[in-house]
Length: 250
Length: 277
Image 1 (tube, each protein chain N blue to C red):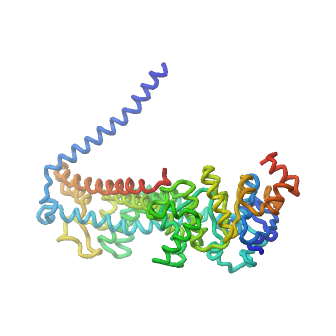
Image 2: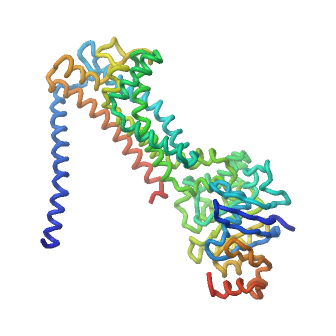
Image 3: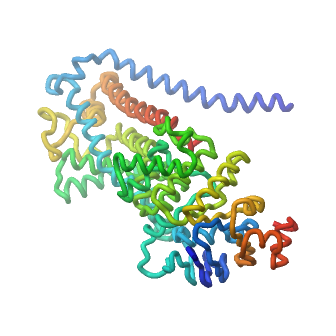
């Protein structure tokens, strides 16, 4: 079933036409990778799905993005609810300058989802969901900055999980991490896709091949190819995709 | 000239002004400490009516804290607006320039404005309140600039992370940006206090008198202040400068205490701001 769908999505930053007529249907409870060379609009595409581009001045959008069949660019859309439903993890781990506990509790507290014991439970559940609980359960009150880069990124994932999203957008979540941490996050992504719809931007081809069920290839703002990951990597329809996969450019 | 000689010349040339500054600094210290002899705990706590300094010290602190109470919140909110919300355009640039200009206005002009506007037109009279408002005008640019710098030092990542969790921008600012910038903001307010602590011209016509019976009982009564008292003693009464050094030392110490508080806050929090590394 389609969880997220874009229809004739066009996006400009001032005069820069960043996304051109993107039509993409993203399946529920699966991992979809968006790959392409730097500056092709990958990040912009996923940021269009929770309207995080809105905060950039000069951003203009035409076309539609449907989440659960509802156009998020429709007038009257509550972007705050949208962003709760469509969570996001960023390129650089960006925990708040607060304790580990407070980082995860931030969302539920602000949205008044829970407090007290119930909040403790949410924090534990989220940290478990991000495969971090066993490493931090004895030091929940330590600063988030005392964690390693990989742990910080998993903390950010836990923070996103705490507001009970349905879709998780990941913007090159491993690009600032070492190989071991990357491997852990990749295992986690597979795990997460059982319950969530994961959309991950990556310029790492191997990563796209390892973690995703579906792969989209973006080139200068255009969707060149989209399909089963296996298919895209083994038998790409477009010559451009093939060249990119075989490392002829990128 | 060989490179080594050049290096020596430069080293010397850079060292001389440094040494001159040190000499002047210690000279000032020496003059100030010559006033130390006239001070003792009794004078500090005795009423001015009995030749003490009590009302002047407390009056000075009243003036400073009150002005900080006005310029602090207004300056911080203005800085948040300018950094986080103001559209980059002509209007913002004009405001920006106006703040710079305000910082450059001579204090006697600010004092005159305070006299005309707060004391006379608003009818506050020669009062603590008029002094607060006038001094806060001098503090504002320092608080705004300092807060702006502190806000800009906070990585935008925090706000982005907060927005992505579905918070409003204002919530993101109050929950993440402001706490992270708090030490810098507090420091800027204290620097503002230190800036106006010795201010005489601004309170000359607006709030000070030479002698009062006790402390002001409301913000609408005049107040005594150390700087004003020194000014009057030297200019109007014609006391020898030496006799005023004691008061100068007290004023110096008050400013120093504020500066030290600022340093303590900064070093304490810097250790807790790993993103500044």
